[in-house]
Image (cartoon, rainbow, N blue to C red; front, side, top):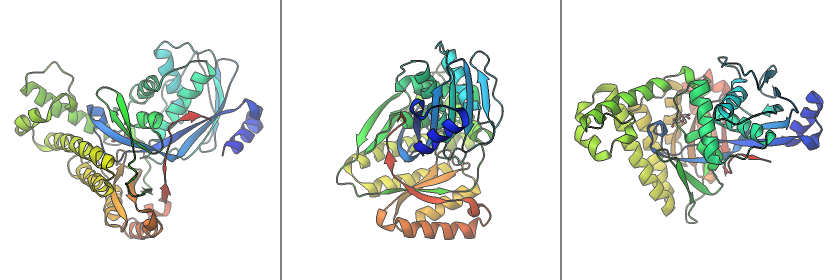
Length: 393
Ligand code: GLA
């Protein structure tokens, strides 16, 4: 991949291979901690050995020129005049990255010439944060800026929340920037701090199985933001009840005891969203204990319970994703499974015994073909492994 990108950079833009840098920015999975990052919950993550790649060279002036092995067309713009978001356009990510850096006062004088590669529109593996992070790292390199992972988490969040308009949390970019092979990344979204917990040597081996649904739709056009708003309405009612109306309406600003005392004030969708937040937070706590103890059975069971709560309480699935989830948890060798990411489209993730993963793939594909004959034509199921976070190679 790296050699191909360098050759193409030379063929398309005349950049000498020795002058090309490549950012490898991995996709992520989130075993536990679904939809609680934007409410300041604690979430878990791992980066995987599938990534987006951005080959680039500083352009020598203030202009950016980009092509992609995945998307059609060329993106070009000047640092001095960054256009607004264009719906569905892959150029939103480099433009968003530049805007985010400029908004924080970083003086950018050099654009980039670049070429991207990787599956970028599948959904569920955080391809959008992966590419956002890749552009941030490339512009920082080109402009001799040395920023910390914490800076880049905040900057990528500005791309997603500010430029793209998605009200998501910091799970994705934190996982992509902080993860290390052999560790579970635990992110405390309230304090924006993290811990890397090593995998116990008594834990059985597992493969990460990704089952695509074949549904591809940008997250911004799903019910994602509406669910975040419902969480805020539930938080507002609970904060008023405990006399802290001045606090930002986020469920993480309420303790479990306060929730237990006042949850009868919530009904319908708001009651369900709050139930998801507080039960998921507990699953994260138990899951971290299980991970430390090397107890993959318990870790997996909690993942499956998280998936069920996403369906029943957070109500974020779509029919194909729910079909996939049900197939996965019934498949021999699967420790646990859930929507990977928001769950409206994209894929499900499972942890599976390596001895059983080949048979599992066949079983899952056959079952999904029966449930979703059309979507299954374009819905690969594949195995991957945990890996390191984003870096310039
Ligand atoms: C998407 C968002 C994340 C997170 C997950 C659900 O991936 O980008 O911030 O909310 O959904 O856990």
